[in-house]
Image (cartoon, rainbow, N blue to C red):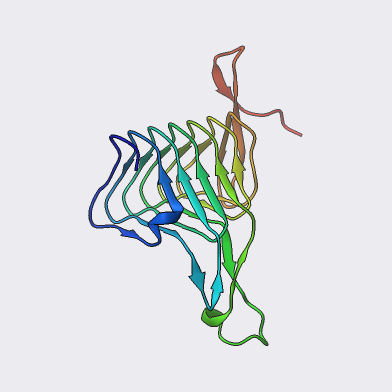
Length: 173
């Protein structure tokens, strides 16, 4: 935990040795942060890295067996869910909860991103810096910096145009 950072109680934090939190970061109550070291008899090498000056709202849920990185200055609303993995679902390999988890790719959230209420970030997603994700969205693919996305699955709504100093809708195809 960096200087000036805190996690409000109550919270669940498993395997804190695989978590790093920068300075002046606030993680609010009822958050569940788990770099998962072991599951179904398999050992993983997870890491969750949270940058400086990050705000994470209540009831956030992050679980990694590979890597989740959150850039400096990000703001996450309540109930944000981020994962880099999925359950094994092979019908011949026994009960789902006893199958190993599968990494579906690291998650990287760039600097100064905003994630609205109840946003889900799926495995393998990268959001460039200054992305905005609308409330209730499920992000299943990566987006470039300065993108505004929303929906299920999330799609590009606007991009920031520095020449106009505003968010603009992309050209219709």
